[in-house]
Length: 200
Ligand SMILES: [Zn+2]
Image 1 (cartoon, rainbow, N blue to C red):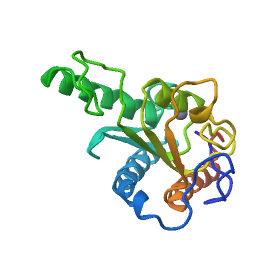
Image 2: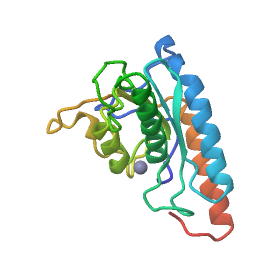
Image 3: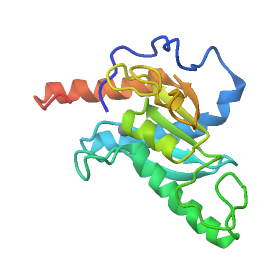
Image 4: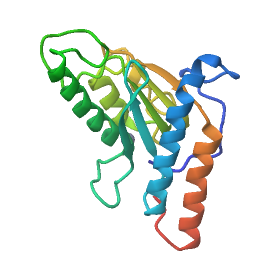
């Protein structure tokens, strides 16, 4: 949840990044548009502008979140809010169809925590807490916009999704519309500095 130095910089070697225009990543574009809109909402109420959505295995948005750290809860990062909302949808669906999880596999019971098959799309590289949440919920994939070289945990500072000590390894796609995501953040912090507000 910190400003990103520079914009659209070269992804670190250790993380999967967007290399050129890939048709395969276009399917996340709509989700990123929504995440950017959520980030904008956060910025307008004085929160660091970060937004996130969760898509199910069919690409349907089942979770939305925006940063609420300043106004609500210190742990209410956009990703956590989106994941919580998605898990509630998964539970309702699961109860309704005899226990199928988000990815479509029938388990015979409601797996509130299991977001297998889902994709998290977020405007800023997840921090350690949020990258941990992706692992804990067994999500298939995390797609993010701007890299966070100060607190990023999907390749920049740490690489939690591919930590060899962890058994679940979600795919990481970094740098989707990084310029837009980064500009949103840098403009927010520039405005904050001009108002004499605290630098986060
Ligand atoms: Zn976070």
